[in-house]
Length: 170
Image (cartoon, rainbow, N blue to C red; front, side, top):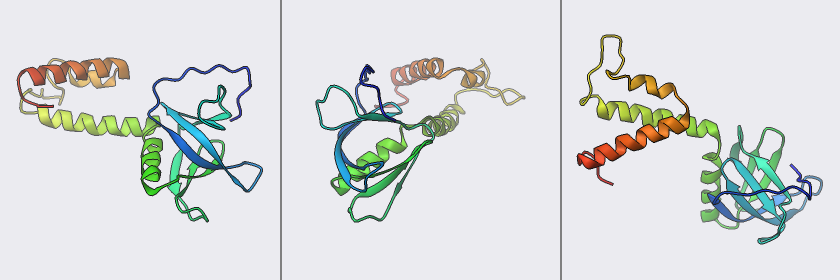
């Protein structure tokens, strides 16, 4: 997606940043671009330090696949609106970028949260009593339906309590 020159973006601390080769939309050549991953947004500039990004890619619902190409470390980023053909400069950078891009969308976060929920419930099973309806006494089970911020706060409090009782060690 192209950005208007008047657009102003502020970005959080990037999860990943660095150069990638990006194939142009209208031209068959690759261009070296500076990329910055912030949440589920992938912004790119012509070079590092440029004031305005050339564009951004919304990663929600996107997939990443490795692909055959003349370039050794090539991959495709399939967003909702377009397929971006890209390449990293080394095997290590390819692995880091693919991992970061795959984990940047909400679907991945939801799947991870579901797995963490299962692990948490199995760890606390011996420490809490289940009612006949399968609900955890005290309403803990019902809390999983609340928004992510509340859930994050609640899990943080649980981890702090477990650290205090020396049941977990970080």
